[in-house]
Image (cartoon, rainbow, N blue to C red; front, top):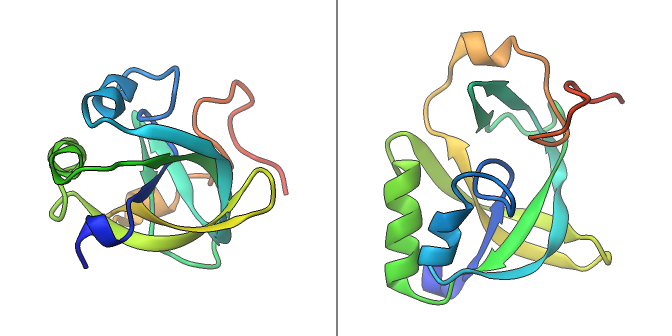
Length: 135
C-alpha cells in the first residue's frame, strides 16, 4: 500500500521533536499532528538506538508523536533513513492521539527478529530519564 493512501507516521525514537534525527522529519516536510501512543502493546527496547519489535501484546503502549508526511519524496527520505524494508519495515498501526482520537499511522518496526533485543526490558517511551517503564 503506498504511503500516500495513509500519510501519517508514528515516531517513537530519534525522529521525535527534540531528538537528533528530527531534522529528517523537517527535510521530509512532515507536519506535527499530535502526541499519541500505540493502541496495542509492543516491546520498545533500547540498545544504543530504540527498536520497536513487532510482537503485539508484549511490552507497553508505546508513546510517541504522529506526523503527516504529504509527499512521496518525504516518504522516500524517511524510508532511506530507516532502511525500509530491510532494517526497519513500515506497518500500519492503530494509534490513539493524546485527545483520544484514533489514527492509522505507518510505524517502523525492526524487520528481523532479534533474540538479544527481545530480552531487554521494554520501555513506554524513548528518551525518558527514568529508563524502563512501570506497569
